[in-house]
Length: 228
Image (tube, rainbow, N blue to C red):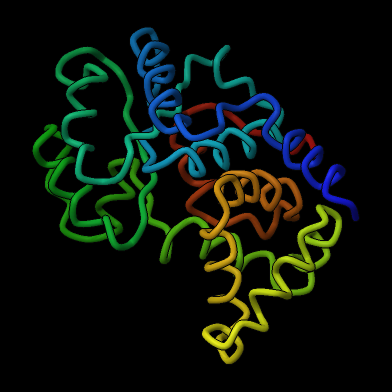
């Protein structure tokens, strides 16, 4: 596949979403404006998480904006307490749920306690508060759920399999597992992580979609149906 077609496919995958060097700041700013009138706010760590949740909602035939649901990427876990306050948790009647990485679970627990959402001591208690944890992160969940054959087939359709093979041949990565190689490859490109968050969610059969993604959507309180 030639470079022009690969670039076109990359653009198309993110056509309706914020992307580029300033995407994290722009996405958060836009989401916070919408969150002021939202019924439900879903806090996630980054824009790849936001994109995955919104993509899955679309597959379920849901219009989050029409439902009064806003996905807010907070830019990591440490600012989450500030964002809980920013979205009007205290007495505003807004339902707040969220998604985080395993490594940031403790920050989210502390933020929930500081925000008056209880004092969760373990993961089941976090889930009862509407917050769900990915192992190790969303990319890890999606790679494990998809499997090597499906991922390599997807890379091939996007013209990226050759690039991934190049990484696999590098001395530092040659002996590593496919899972580790894929995580490294996703993190190496400026748009790969967010683009493949969307593409992998679109490609997965419903039965294999990672539980944290389906659970956080269910926690928004609206029904889902499989739309494709």
